[in-house]
Structure formats: C-alpha cells, structure tokens
Length: 450
Ligand code: NAI
Image 1: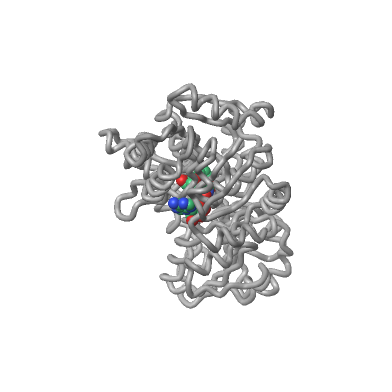
Image 2: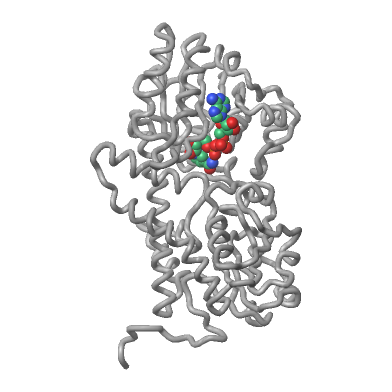
C-alpha cells in the first residue's frame, strides 16, 4: 500500500520506517527542510535506538523516501497519516491543533483519489470531526474517510513498541476505511497483535485515558514514596508487593522525580481541558497534574536538604537530563525544573547526559556541560542522578568519591545499592526510603507509642 506520513518526528519517522519495513511504500513529509535534507542523506535527526539502521535498509530497498512536497506525496496515497505535534496551547493547556488543522487543509488540496486520512497525533475527542470538516469544506468533491489511530509507542523502545504493540486501536466510522486500515496493519495482526476497532471518538479518548492512567500510576507511587520516607518503609518493596497483584501490575511503579516528557504533561492537561468543555471535571487527573507539578520543586528541596539546608555557592553535579533514558528528548524533562529551582537557590550546575546535551543547551542555561560522569562530578558538593541511563549504573563509585568535593549522592531513580554507595564513602539519599546507613533509621513522627 502507499502510505504518506505528514510529520517526520519521533512518531512519524518511526511509524513510517516500520510500515516500510512491513513492505508498504512510504513517503515521509516534513515542513522542516533541514530535517528532510538530513533524512535524504541518511542522517536521522533524532536519537532512537535502531532507527538509523531501519531507515537505511528501507531507503536502500526503495520503500521509504522523504520530501517537503506534501501535495505530490498525498496525491496517490492509500492512507495519509497526520503525525504532527499537538503541544499544549499557551495559556490554557488545551491541545494546540493548529498543526493538525494546517496539515488537514494541505491534505485536502492534494487528495487525488479515495484516501483514508488517519490522525495519529494525540488529539482531543472530536478532532476527527474537525479534520473531516476542513477537508470537506476545502474539497467538496474529495473521496475520503477520516480515521483515528492513536500511537502508543514509547520513545527509547519505539520500534519494538510499534512492531510488537500491546494493541493497535483504530477508530473508524465506515467499513471502507476499516478495510484499508486492516490491510495496512495486516503484518501486525499476523504478529498476533490485538487490533481493537472502535468508533472514532472512542479511539481518540482511549489514547488520553491511557496516558492519564499511566500518569496517575506514577504519581500514586510517588506519593506513597513520600510517606515511606516519613514512616521508615521502602517504596521499592511496597511497589513490588502491590505490583504482584495482577489487578495492579508491576509496571509504572518506580518512584522518582515525577513524570515529564513530550506526552504525559501535555496530554493530562489537554484531557482535563477537553473534559471541562463538556462540563465534566476529572478530579483524579486534576490532582495528578497538581501533585506532579509540585514534585519537581520538592526534588530540588530534597537536594538542598542533602546539602545541609543550602546550596548557595555549592556545586551540584547532575547526571541525566533527558526525560528518560534512550532518548534525546528534553521536552518537559524533570531535570529542567529541578535545575532551575537549584539555580534559583544559588547552586552552580555541572551536568552530563549521554545523548541529550545538545537539546539541553537550548533549554538550560548557565550550566557547565561535561564530557563524562566523572568530569561532571569533579569538584561537586553533591551528585544528583536524575535520569537512569544504563551508562550510570556501573559507575566507579570510589573514583567519583575521589573527584568530588562533597560526599553525597541523591539518587532520584533508585538505581544504586545503599551498601555499595556507603562503602565508597558516600551518604546516599534516594526516593521513598530513609537512609539505613549513616543516619538514624527511625520513623520521624507520629510513631505509635511502644
Ligand atoms: P515531533 O515534534 O517530534 O514531530 C512533529 C513533526 O511534524 C515535526 O518534525 C514538524 O516539523 C512536523 N510538521 C508540523 N507541521 C507539519 C505540516 N503541516 N506538514 C508536515 N510536517 C509538519 O512530534 P512527535 O513527538 O513525533 O509527536 C507527534 C504526535 O504524536 C503528537 O501528537 C504526540 O502527542 C503524539 N505521540 C508522541 C509520542 C512520543 O513518544 N513522542 C508517543 C505517542 C504519541
């Protein structure tokens, strides 16, 4: 089949490359000339494990190509995917649909024959109706259907997620479109991936509901972590204990600095706003957003406490800047707020990230960027692990201790073992547990009388 992908970012490029790998003929379109030039030269503009090889092999086989010329890419397509950004609209938190609308308008002008227009971007309920309306207004003669096919891939594991998804959700309101979508995803159904056909609005809402639920799970365990620190329990064990219950499940129960990234913050907010438009208040999700927002500054306060109550003039070494490992994506990364709060409290920041430093430089200023974790730690009063890249798991703790001025590690991802860190001479502060070594291991307050 002929597939056109409008928007060649994290989602568009991965989806396009995977569809090509399944044997479809794919054209990826982007308005960003530099991005398209890079892709034509075989340079992948984002960091996503395995993507360069996947694009290269499919480009060599002639199954994927890149262009800025949307009209020619759409004219003869069976399916045109809209995979452009839907960021938070400034001021009100609604999803900004301007890129989706612009893409719909351009697609309408170029449609040459029956085409299924598929919204892959994460969009509020009713956006399919908007896209349909734009196309119909622009081209009353066009033969088309509008389908919702939200994407659930995770950055860092995107190819595997696309090829072996837990499920594919397709919201189609007519049989003709359904047939095209079934054919498009046939290679996945052969891989035994469940494909859930729904109506269009249900598919749109399913994506937001999934992200809001995952954000809730993370936020829930983060609050339990706070309680663990006060009462002398260990959140990692609590998470294991509850996660073994199949009704709860063990995933997404790692306490940490709060969720960030290009999806959860904007999608939770957009869901709240679109529900409000229908007179519904999603109070659970509203609390999740508020609790998560507050958590970033709470993490900065944790670092300040670890430094004895002030970071004024102190040097904080930050390991990991991207919102999670295996991506270069800095959008809404917790590191941004944490570093900002520490800088406002007077700290000097040294930082390292295995792949995200170029992106970080665009959003984080007055930071000394370093070449390695050891270089980052040199002369620092405290070391803070913000993103759990594998490269930080096996650091030589003794060497870190030698190069640092202070001897405190704040581990916001709970990756180290306290005994090991203590053996290297550090005080170790993590999330959701009191330090057992070095400091008193006693519940702080409201302890039941013996
Ligand atoms: P992105 O910002 O990486 O990519 C969007 C691309 O669209 C950019 O390269 C931009 O230049 C291009 N673009 C914008 N308007 C265009 C137009 N009219 N014609 C052609 N190209 C145009 O965004 P990303 O992360 O790929 O997200 C896309 C959508 O997918 C969003 O709605 C997001 O919420 C959703 N999503 C993202 C996931 C992720 O992990 N990044 C996962 C699941 C869904």
